Image 1: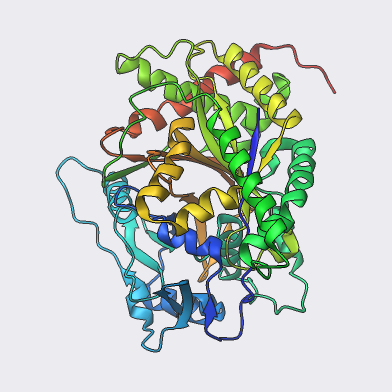
Image 2 (image 1 turned 180 degrees about the horizontal axis):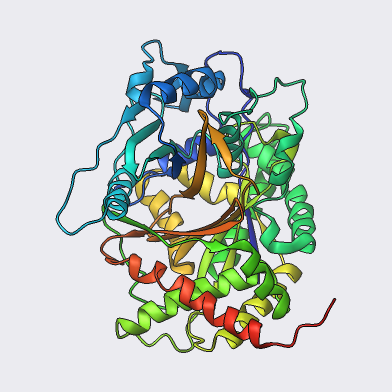
Length: 488
């Protein structure tokens, strides 16, 4: 049984104009989902060459990012939820800051940066100010700068933030006004987060979510108590049914990667892979690019567990994968509108080919079966309840999944920023409840980036997982090169 879980944001603001505005219920949910173990921040890193200066960065952010009024607004909570309020004391220096990596014996500059990103991922943003911050390591390594970005999930989901970050690069345009159509250079974003599921899956999710759309609207804007009583009763029954259906899904296989996370995070990333090589393997082994990459993720996790003395044979874990439900001509609008589907990773299959085709079969199952769930009534309502009830509902997910995973295709050509080249891009989404692992796969400028963020107690050496990603891919590459190639 497959479950599609849907959130929606119905904020009236797009980018320009500055009224005080009540935060949508779903965005309020993300605001209140922060826990000591998991902060609801999207964290990203850009590597920029040649390095840029702090003043140039501040000027660009001032000129481009602040055209989105959300980035000048702070959050004011009240008895009814929260509202967006203009920060009358806004100071760019509080949000765009210099970062210095303190040397530690035996650690490379890259390891120092990874450690610092992990620390920042576990450090709350200042609730007295707009909930975002950029930190620049001006002289990172070999003439590069490293830009660390942290943005609270209540501001926007990943698909909207990708559009925002594109708009601040060289040649990027200001956010369109409500009546304008978005620019053509966002075409690569179309169905970005949905692409791993295939077109049949996309249609299934959209058809399913269309049926729930009226329900979501009702949760966001409740009808008149008399006129809407039957509708609210129907939605209540539907929410209970959906929660029950999800709860009946078998729990994830027990591994050391599951457990009660603490307040410390670690981040690691692997050397990038050439996208052309991944395409060649997918063609040679008759699998999709996503099948190949997900098989490598499963293999890396399984090998890591085996080396720690855990037998992964026969085990499978789930990763909750976000799928975009926002019309792409609205990609510039902030707020949250996405769904999640549970993706099974066969970590217990050691043979790389057998594992690849197991992943392919799982993807086929995913494409052919969907049961829509009104997750607005599961997670966003959970975010508005008292903390113990919220945590209990969120931990339904923790029992069913080991990780949150993003798989996003980025621009084919390198971006320019303040006259320099953005050489590498990575980002991670937060993990909710007691989920302690986040996996990110991003294609950018002809390369595939693989990153990991983990709870430090559950996975003290995330580099031991990421360093296995390339070897797992190389096994498939070697097999593909040994196959007879026709002149097709």
